Image 1: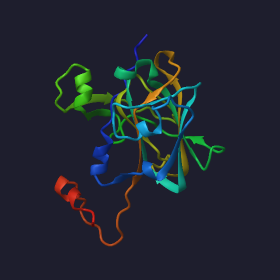
Image 2 (image 1 turned 45 degrees about the vertical axis):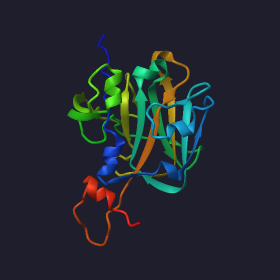
Image 3 (image 1 turned 90 degrees about the horizontal axis):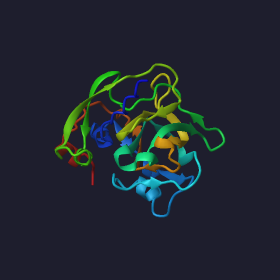
Length: 232
């Protein structure tokens, strides 16, 4: 019996933000959870700290509900999981659903995979220093190569195998167009080692940045440009 390949880590979402093609919009939504242990709730999911986490405190499925005040275009969902630290609390099967409200949610259809940047083949992902330290390796940030196989078809649930890093879930239709929705629900259906409660360390939601209709200029992504791109 073959052992499933471990889920490879995706790029840090901040890399996506630096391209100027997407924007994080989690702060525009109202977040709720099916359950949580006191002190391990929504605030910990959204604090930009990979050392904190949401911990559920109830029966499965464990739910994260993200509700927008108006219909919103969403392109990518990013989830941080860390099997090395969380072991049996780490999700092994996740369902991502979208809809107008709790009564008409539908699972995202189409291929779901860890990387939002490349198709099948060998890719490079940045591995954060803290993640390398946990693995007993040099603390320097480096690139690592992973082989990613994309399965064709209409996968509706994301299967995770000992994930350690960012997982990118495209929120697009069969034509690769971003989804417009009032609500996103993330459902943890199972954990590693048949664990009861779950941990999620961070969740981010991205919308595409629209091109200006007043002339199109080359996109600048240098650090110097990003510092002065906003009018104060």
